[in-house]
Length: 367
Image (cartoon, rainbow, N blue to C red; front, side):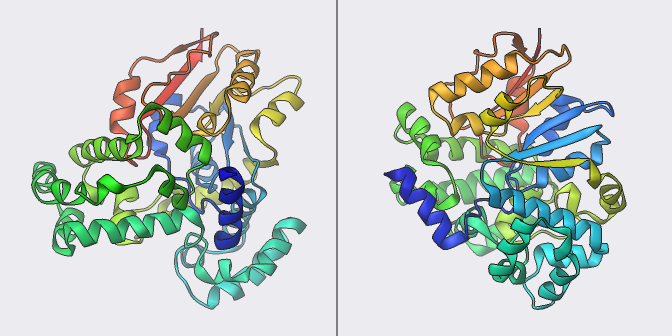
């Protein structure tokens, strides 16, 4: 029943867009997977940013898949914009709400697949809003900004954003912000309220099974780690949450001016697949991927499907495979990757992850 309501909520309010942006720290993946030019990457589309950031790593090929066809439409739209627009127009098309976006869309719409073109023609308001200003995650981050500003105070949030000294930021967060945001109201934070942010019912059940206060405790712990290790001005995820926008110097790699030409050159390497992960793995007799990013997809599926996915990956016949995944679970480590070993430094990677969205980042490599 909850799954049914979740799907209809996302469809009704967000036109089936969960994510217009991928909220995963790509720097972690670069450190863990050590990308090389010969690598063949398999990743989850989500908001499309992971595949686009991967274009800047000079990989051999990038296969991006998602079972939600609209998430793939978002990636198609971003690719079409990159192919057809100069940097200034691309930046505005992604980030700014204005009528001009519709004129820009008409320039690129024939670069889209028929299904993607039909979807955006019918939902032209998505274009008008600016691509990134859509979806459940966008709405959730706006709510988070409101909550943090209301309880911590606009002045303290402004100080946090402008701070240039890490020790000063740590002190500010510890004394002026943390006690105010984790208050009597946060105690009433329902796990199910995370549905508003696009968190799946299955993932919420996983956390709830471990601890009824799981979501609150995860964010409290992880936010303290994030603000203790990286200045907000060097962390575009939290800069966006606290200010409600990117700027051209504090933004994901694919949105930065200095990367745009390289992005245009490598965008052809992306292959978009409309399928869920297990169906795709079953359909391929000889998988040739050696770098696999599973996002948090294993949190979204039941035990049977999770085991099948892991079994298929275990049986890929390459000796240089590395797999990275994220989870909100505090107890679950994916030891079912029986033909893999967990890379050293996993605790380090989880601690320096800059979004504060996940409890752990887990990395495996072939034995």
